[in-house]
Amino acid sequence: MARWAWLAAACVAGLLSAARLPAAECGSFELSVLVDGSPAAEYPFRGRTYIEALRGRNFSLRLHNPTAGRVAVALAVDGLNVVDAKHATAASATKWILAPGQTIEIPGWQISGKTARRFFFTDTARSYANWIGNTRNVGTIEAVFFREKAPTPLPIERGPARPLREGAPASGASPDGPKSSARVEGGVPSGASEADRFAATGIGSRTSFPVRWLSFEEEPVPAATISLRYEYRRELVRLGVLSGEGDLYARDRGRGFERGYAPDPH
Image 1 (cartoon, rainbow, N blue to C red):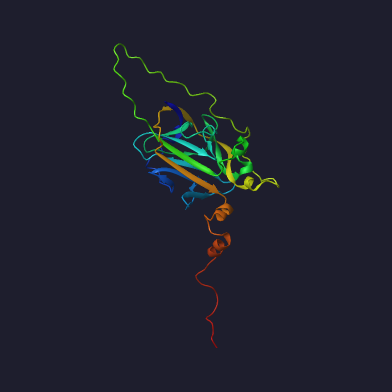
Image 2 (image 1 turned 120 degrees about the vertical axis):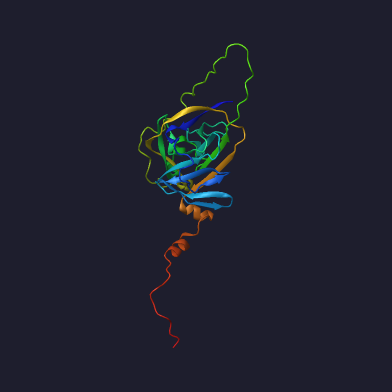
């Protein structure tokens, strides 16, 4: 069944010639997190890949298609599709379409055909997922890649050819989100639970990001799935992903030489 998906029209130029960034990979498909334009450090741990969330900092998601054909990518942050903020299966989700060898950078939640609102790290209590009312999967970023299904040859028909009729995108697919373009900041109220203080993603300032609808029929089985987890440093330390802060900071202050003299044995 043909599905409708999104393409960031302004990103077509970002092909394989673009600089390659450190990224979680699966069969050369890539998902990278860029924080303020720079690739986030990744920490493989117990079969997962973690990154450190930096409170209040903007981030974007870079996707790369290494194949010679188009692919569709279902992309979710905190369990919400970044196109329409719905919680759905990867197969049924509205997807991004990448041309052969294409790399695109998704700056935020797509709130219209022309505008996105930036991703940024914040506490769960201040997150977009909390505003939506679904915080079950905060702290996750996942991209699922689908190859395009090979077209089925049409039977030869006698008589005049009839043009194929294309459908139209479903209306109302994207929510407007919070009306204010100012991002939600500030501390978590006192008395909030520990879970309210864990890292999540907010909905930030508006940025121009034109997209258009395309027709695409994907293979039923994904070609690749890439999952990332993000947490604040304190949670990464508690999980064992990073060393304890005391030891880490002590190592950072270490020197090759100290002032002093050789001991005198008398």
